[in-house]
Image 1: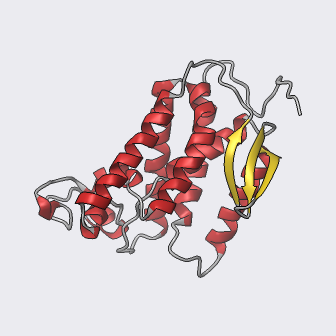
Image 2: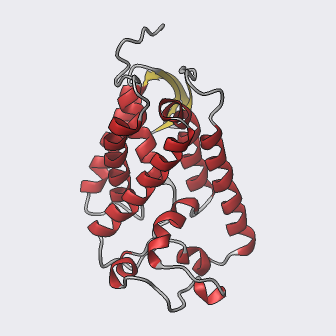
Length: 235
């Protein structure tokens, strides 16, 4: 629907978005590892599989990934899944949203709290997906849940900021973040309600959105306002 390009929202508290850039680099490096060294079954072993997550407390027996000589409890996949992606389009879409919106959320929290926030949103998104599909044998991978948390936090912090986007992938538009991200959120809600919504884990998006909206209330720096209160913007 919309591809974000950049926002008009300078940093106020940090000199550079080190955590945001580091997360993007880690995701890219993991994807290169996927493409060059890991089989599809090995990648699936890093994903959150609801039936396995709820079926055992700790997985000690080899799985599709542990057959390669590694051993992880199934709970660990709630962290690992968010750094793996199905294809280049999946990766680029998530990283573009993180690049455009992550820096200002990091600015509102500080580096350490933003990293904790991002990981927490991803874990909650994975759990939300698993709770909604507890019998699923399909592994969940991708940063979408964590990025959805970033989107929710940005929406609550800066709804009036202007964002340059490509509408329908070709039309450049300048919209408020409230409109652009509000439509994105509405799209997730509509898709999760459809009986045949394809292979996308929409419930993970919803879980990430809820987590981000709640956590930003407690994790932003003291004095950081919500909804651009007290901020004068230039059109």
